[in-house]
Structure formats: C-alpha cells, structure tokens
Length: 324
Image (cartoon, rainbow, N blue to C red; front, top):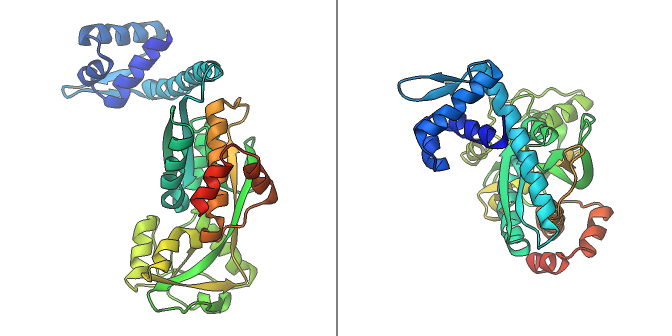
C-alpha cells in the first residue's frame, strides 16, 4: 500500500464511480481498477461494492477512507511545512466556525487572507459546534473557532472573544435601548434551536439559573430559517448580536438586551500536537486581526492578549484599514 494507491482509492470511493475517478485522476480506468483490486488483495478484504451504476464503499472501505484522509492530509501538511520555509506561505489550510459565526466571519476573513497570503489555498467550513470540535480534534481542520467549554480535551486553545445574546423580534417589536428581564422573555413565544445545539444549551442554562422554564413554540436548527421566521413575526429568539447585526441595522429585525446577560465565550482551537506551519500561522494572524477590526461593530469583547497580538502582527495595517 502506498500514498498513490490510497489517494486513488479515496477518489473512487468518494465519487462512487471508477470512470469519474479515472477522468479526474487522468489515468486509464482499467489501470485504476487493477490498483483497487491489488489493494483489496493486499488487505484481504473487499473495499468497494460494485453495482451497475458505480461503486459504494463497504464497511471496511469506509474505515480505510477515514484513515486515508488523515494519512494524506498529514503527508500534504508535511510537504507544505517543509517547502513553506523556502518561500512566502503556501499550501492549504482549513478553517471552521460554528454556523452562528459562518456568514459573519468567513467572507470577510477569506477576503483579508487572500490579500495577506495569496499563495495559500483556504478551505472554509461551518457546522454544528460539536462537529467542528470533532473535526479539529481529528486534525481535519487546522484551525477553528469553538465555544469555550470544560470539555475541550487535548485541543490547544486561545481565548478569542466574548459576546452577549440579544432578544430578537420582527421589525418594530423592540425599540433601541430596550431591556427585558429574563422572566419577561420566558413568557414570549420563542423559536430556538433544539438541544444539544450549543446556543440552546446556553439559553437553557440561563433560564435554569433563574428557576425559569424555557419551552419554545418552535425548534429550528437551520439558522437562516430561524431568523426568517422571526422576521415574519412567528415569534422571538435569542441569538448573539453578531449573527444579525446587519438585519438589525437595516431595520428588518429589532433587538433588545436581556437582563441578566447571556454570554458566550469563543476560543481559537488547534489540533493537538500539530506543528504550526507558516500558512497556519498566517491564517491565525488574519483571524485575530479580523476579530479586532470587527469588534466594535459586532459588539465583541476581545481579550487583551488578542489586542496585543494584533498590535505586533504583520497584519496590523490591514486590520486598521478594515476597521475604518
């Protein structure tokens, strides 16, 4: 078994077609088929189930797919890390955020990073916080933003920001400067994500600390749909202000503060034992600079350590121009 065999097998298994994989890899289909057969004979198990319309991985094939992804990623990372010291940052880096930060952070970060590290290929991912945590822990992500919890495991983390959740309603429901006690919020028709979504757990904890119950009229895990339902007047919700800042400023939603405040803390996380590369270090600087530049607009509280890092990083001038 060699790296080329693993890579070719992964292409076939993911595309579920020998012919499509052969076209992508630019190899003859019979040669690719022989490679897969040789791999199956070497391992002593069937890796692919053949069908008239293509192939699907067997249980053993799915196990090999996961290992192949990790092995090939590490090989690529080793190559990129060594070559990167001979030139400006290059290679590929992957970055993930929870869904509640995706639309707020990923476009602006990508634009900034393309200017500061044009030779690095950036792969952006958003998902449920539990999935992002799993992917960075397994090394599928080089860097990620995660909720700060007591179960960070062996991840290397840096405090990144704190923000408050606000009560959101349709346009005109709340006035600028309005505040509602949590007991008042409990009496509203609430639309919230279902457990174990991290935002829902934060809301549940806040209600429990006040001996209040929280029974939403709707549970919606798709953030765009949840926000649209609130805009339509179907209920209210509790979300970090950064998720909806543009909609509030445009008057499409209204927001009120909640007392006592519901706070979430976010960290920047890296896989355990992963040696930083010039590309991943450049991405980390870009993330910190973006957070600092957008802090005032999105009502983020940034730790002093992040501010000091930004002030001494090569991206400082870029951060200032973005904030302006």
